Amino acid sequence: MAQYSKTPVSKNDDLTLQVTALTNEGQGVARVENFAVFVPGALPGETVSAHIIKVTASYAVAKILDFVTVSPDRTDPGCPVYAQCGGCTLRHLHYAAQLEQKRLWVGDALSRLGGFSDVSVQPVAGMETPSRYRNKGSFPFGTAGNAVVFGFYAARSHVLVPLADCPIQDERVVECAERVCAWANECRIPVYDEKTGKGQLRHVVVRTNADGARMVTVVTRGPLRRRDELFGLLGDCESVWHNENPKNTNVIFGELFTLLFGKPALIETIGDKRFSVGPQSFLQVNRKQTQVLYEAAASLLAAEPDETIVDAYCGVGTISLFLAGGCKQVIGVEQVAAAVEDAERNAVLNGVTNASFITGEVESVLPRLVAEQTKIDALVLDPPRKGCGEAALKAIAQSGANRVVYVSCNPATLARDCKFLAGRGFSLAAVQPVDMFPHTCHVETVCLLVKNSRS
Figure 1 (cartoon, helix red, strand yellow):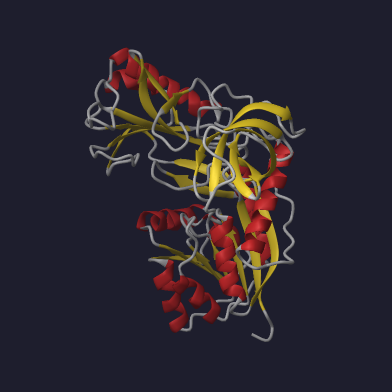
Figure 2 (spheres, one colour):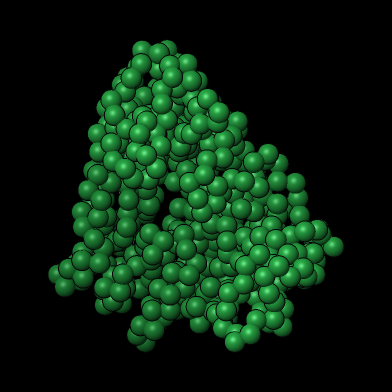
């Protein structure tokens, strides 16, 4: 971002600003003599009266005082704590416009950061009903007066915003959190204070599956008190766990899990596949869009019956199991040992015999597979937000694979990694974004890269 020796705006200026764009964090962008002014809450096409609250050498931040013109895409957020809560960032933007904005973000990243000037980004695959889609919620506790409350943190803070409901959460998730909160108030369970390290009740994590079963994990700093009263409130839940986290940290879970009663795991169904889900298992929280995402990946990959596919960063084997029916063999690679154990159980659960899993960092395992001349016809990549390590990308280029499907939650690192592969003989052939998290700025993208015939 360019720096100015003298900025064209100053702190406490009152200005009329025309908003022309939206950042990938959901802030409106206006320009004064080409100097960027970020306007939280404003939308492209709007004109606002604003007060400058921060100025740096390269940008300013303004607070809206009033709207001069309002975008036709603005809508009622439909959530009483939207302005305070840090969970959603786009509820004030009509859903169809959210999808188009996400398509533009993906296209901008691939063009600006990846150098793909002629890339065609397909319309974002959205939800017919973009509400109540989250089947898992993690709620911290706090106090309001003398009462225990639960909620979410405000953006970029650990200031708790209490809530009575959340329109993107499954109602059963919120209802279970309410029960634990009622138990804490009834039994006078002290809430953990991050600043002092005192108190007991830290979080409740609730998950539901497609059948409506509920798994509740109560996290405390020390041993669980008044468990009989807790059982009385959660006795109809299918799985209840206690997690003890004695450390002064903002990480939710500690190391010690105890099954209080019920089943140790739930069975989640995505498409025609079933997955065992425990309190620590990672599985996407939007089951409907997860199926859309994985079916898009499988369709773009178009595996042949005689092919060997490597599923890098395979997690609990979700994509591996979606692909296994269409190819000779799937090799999953994942560095988290517990996830590999889940993947192996999930393969058995689904009767899949042609999927195997390797525990290790992709950046170490892939080069080894290539050095051993393992037959690799194609790869699926689903890395964390930081993207793929260079060692993995180099191994992919040397693997002999003729196509790569890249599943990404971060358009910036996706563009960077696709650029790397494009410089080593691959062409970007298809880009399909999927809206896994409506009303937020997050977007998943599935890309197909194909090895050039002369490479």
